[in-house]
Image 1: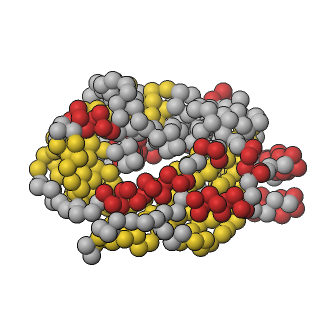
Image 2 (image 1 turned 45 degrees about the vertical axis):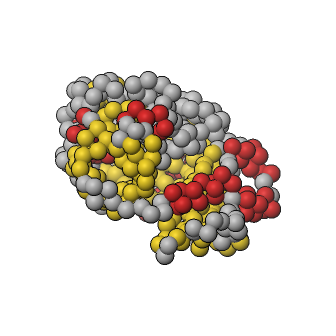
Image 3 (image 1 turned 90 degrees about the horizontal axis):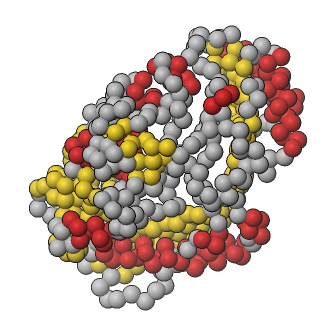
Length: 444
């Protein structure tokens, strides 16, 4: 992947930038390779291989700042690129808030790139035939089906990739991360009684042996079949259970509202919330960035700041905003990390709950399995989303529902927080389990 020659070239480029008029500079070299096999109706449809090498440079020149990127990595071309970039920065307005991350905050432990165990050496031995078979194994298009429905289309996509990133700056920063990823996703459409229904499933792991592409095909078909006969339920207030596949829709707006950019722009419904109990006691969200063997884990953020496991929200109390060096200087606040790396919603009211247990706990309500459109207001927290899922009674699914809207405000929604499970999917970037909320407005 990234060679010693390239590392030397980047070091020399940073020195050249300083000798040519930049007081400070940082460089991020990214190298990736991906192989992909797409199928259509159980047959190979497309095979692609993508390889990419790119260098991003941030230059600090006479109180001004600019960022640039190139894929020309030979010495002469890079020197010419840097000289032109420096002249461009000199034409920009001064920006005194821009700076490199302070050396005492940066990561010192990401030297090899594989410290988090997210590299599968087996990828180097995967043959084209293995990739084709992994894609074809998931197909259920030719499966014998009951008379009640017919599979009319199946689109699948297998891919495996390796990505390596090196980050350096003129303060002596050196961070490296390498990770492999093996992914499969499939969408199946069926027809029943003249209506079409679709189901989707996916899987993603850092190791090929953990990927179960065949299970995705079966799951996607089951999800499509489960929607047969769906329609709206009566409008009103319901207990809402969010399936773990879509539960991040409830926490992502909260995390965005804690972003330093949102705070700085006064575009957050969580302004001035640090240290305040905004959410109920049962909500604790950790940032857990160092999970071994996971493709989403990181030892450092995009400016090299060291990541650490810590609480974002603890017992309903907001503990931090996500603030990089630039936003910290603008707000006059101490920087943290740029973004949460691996947010994890902890179980409540006890560990060991899965979706079925939470449905039983809630009794009656609507289980939401997918969102299909809608929006939210980042400044107020108001939201309106189209949903599909299932009506449940006495903890048991009764029938599928669709063509309904769920509306409300995220602050109000979380005040009705009832439960969170222990069933978050480890392959997702956010570890959000099944969630339950009381008194949620649905209209159909």
